[in-house]
Length: 147
Image: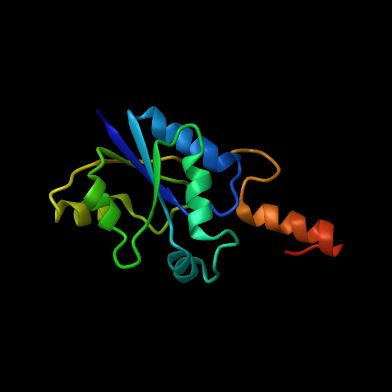
């Protein structure tokens, strides 16, 4: 059985999230998704997510391609990977903080050698990011445009 791991914030679900997870599932038999903790998102993006972590985890786990969704670690980003021992890790197009080669080297310290694949496809639709969804909500409900 090939175990695939994907990770992300998944704040406001949109078609890009679904396509990323569908692609990840196509690479193996079981897809486990690590959902970023609220505090981790705050450190990386400079703001807390709109949707609380447990609610995001539940929604991601409800998606058809996903077999299981778990919350990430507050201490070590590699902790869930070490515990799950995936055969394949799929990185999303906006996960630029992960360098594939650096990640491979870090995981080798734990005797892990998963294949690392980057999903580079952006979905062409009006709301293909959480930011674009928030921007539209503000525009509609506050009657002003934001940049």
